[in-house]
Length: 342
Image 1 (cartoon, helix red, strand yellow):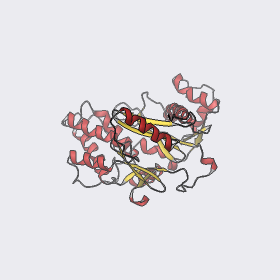
Image 2 (tube, helix red, strand yellow; image 1 turned 180 degrees about the vertical axis):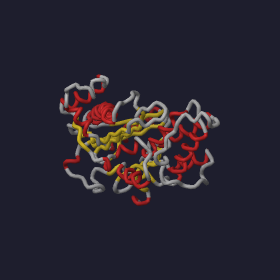
Image 3 (tube, one colour; image 1 turned 90 degrees about the horizontal axis):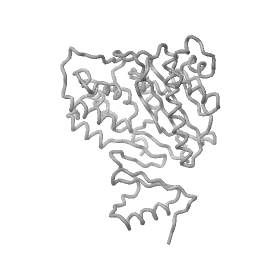
Image 4 (cartoon, helix red, strand yellow; image 1 turned 120 degrees about the vertical axis):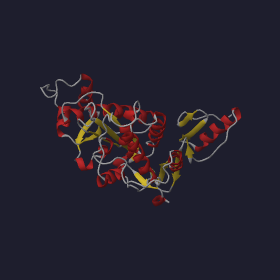
């Protein structure tokens, strides 16, 4: 009887009755499928092309993850298929307030729209800030909030051919060197005082592992920062937690993750604060838990590196940007057109 080798890695992703199977050995993958077929009634769909609304296009250069079919269904469901396109998901400098003078809209419809948009963030990360913004008003949705959500849908209509690109390890797109092996790139950023209602900041982070996008976030901070330095420092501390978790996951998959991990930040004061243990008037009020960042820096597991604002990829997760800057950062996220990879 054939058995699995302890030296090979076999990964199974299970969601209800849908499975993804991958691993080091094609022979062991086939053996696993045979054993499953002997116990359960199953259909083998062969190479991954579709899974839970996510579509995968295989090319010689890599794999493109997109949701064309799902997005088209969402546009039809909410009667947005015939609306005009817009070049950016959120109007530049848009700020949404309480708007108590506006009429309420159907809360069920609003939640359905926002829920659908949240799922699209799995393949189109550049809408994360806008989706996070409209998600803040679930309890009492107004006309301006629904208009902002529909604006994102109009943006998606023009970007159905965009998807996240995962380059093959042997690919020269982009060209790799030995220094790229196990290298994780991390960007983190925060606006300051951005929310009109509670004046809290929105932070974001973006991770790439060997040039492939693997994690991103756009979220409002749960504390009130008193300066841009403090907002960036808190954002870096939150990103550090994700850094360590992803590093542990990568190592558990028997892959290399180089240390120290470089965290790209565009605020020199926050970088200095992470290295300087002296407690002074500008930092003594910061909650102790955020100084976890300083501890990781001192241990050599993390290194904060200055990144010019124009190259700060995570900026797209913290605020509404003008079209030229938005399109530049969208390309840096790893979003590619499907047809250019045919």
